[in-house]
Length: 176
Image 1 (tube, rainbow, N blue to C red):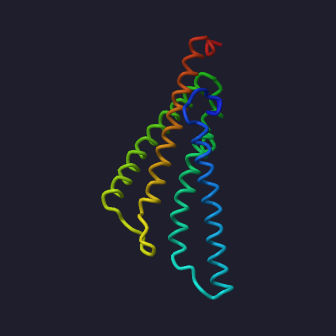
Image 2 (image 1 turned 180 degrees about the vertical axis):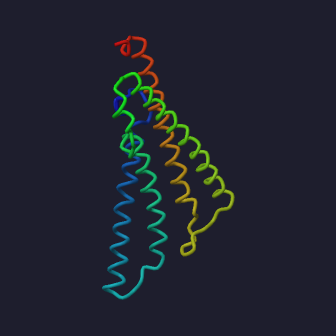
Image 3 (image 1 turned 135 degrees about the horizontal axis):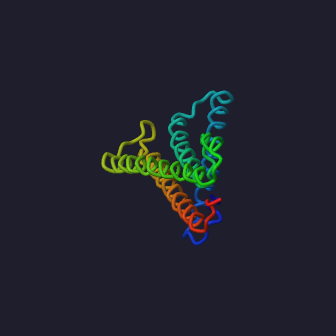
């Protein structure tokens, strides 16, 4: 159950981290800047930043889904592991953790399939935003990429934890 940062030899691991954190930082700054600009334009200059909600929404999709992927990467998603409070056996605790990993990965993979179907639909239909006529593929692709990354991280954790469980079982770690 080590953090994934300690897992060696995963190609592009650092690049994914830089990409996700970069997207989160840039979109955060842009969203705050656009909101501030809209407020100043409306209340100081008496004009309107027409369509700002549309742009902010598109950026927010990228912020939210890269943030969700980063939470999966860092194992900082909210979880309710109350079972481990009552189970005292390390073996059964690890088994419960593996079941949780398996279910999380399975559900995430299922939702990833749906997200990718949604992105494929966006490619076929090419819907446009109402104000600026921007392709809705911009926020839709954030959903697809976010779920692909979440599935990737959860799959790696499942494999990592399964290998650790098997290794510990073979070495007699749970015989005590």
